[in-house]
Length: 293
Image 1 (spheres, rainbow, N blue to C red):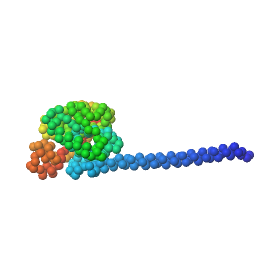
Image 2 (cartoon, rainbow, N blue to C red):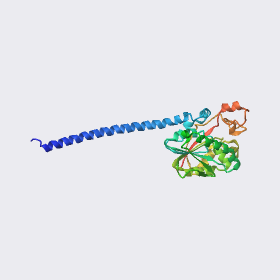
Image 3 (cartoon, one colour):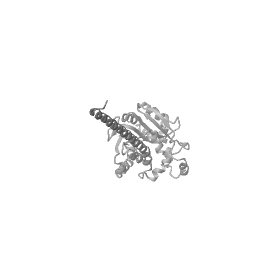
Image 4 (cartoon, rainbow, N blue to C red):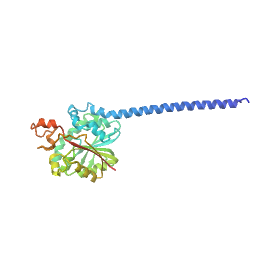
């Protein structure tokens, strides 16, 4: 039986349709491969961008010299930092960590900085020059810090930006001893909890005291016990998920006339035993990671 003209036309249509579907499938596979490649490249860029931020020219040689004690890459990785996150740093001081966080978060994330204002007029006056210098530093380098939002924290209240369950990470480095002295540690912890999204993390680095150190000794020496920090963080609603020895220093005997400020970079005792303190290096520090359930 011979095929009719209609049958031949239908056969051609079927063949053409099959051909087009084959091309579409190949194109889709190629596109998926390209997307996968781009995703891999993007992930690779994210993984190396922290290295780039740490090695960037915005950091001074003096800041870089402290990396051996502060381990910024390992510390920020322990805090599960990612370049797409909204991050709030508390009490940035002169901006040692801001110099890393600002370029790292600039393109896909957002960095907020809360300068701490003491409830004590005398203590607030001590910090005012540092805070003003920090703001000038940011204003003078908009290509690095232009996206950073700066506000304040005082008596457990943030000012300058909205903080209600907004942040993926709240980070603070070597500030807790000041808040204990100021009587603001607990109210600050509650403020951090309110600022974090559920599942967000609080990253803490602090000078570490020997177990059994009294609160007054913590205030006088600048060293705080891990147990004290954990107890108060848990009371504020946080759950401890991990602790790290990244910033431990077994050379630190913690028994100096000027407390933690005897060590570099402060050298509060001047030239007295300076070489000894330089050999010890910066303080022994706890590094703790908490989560807001």
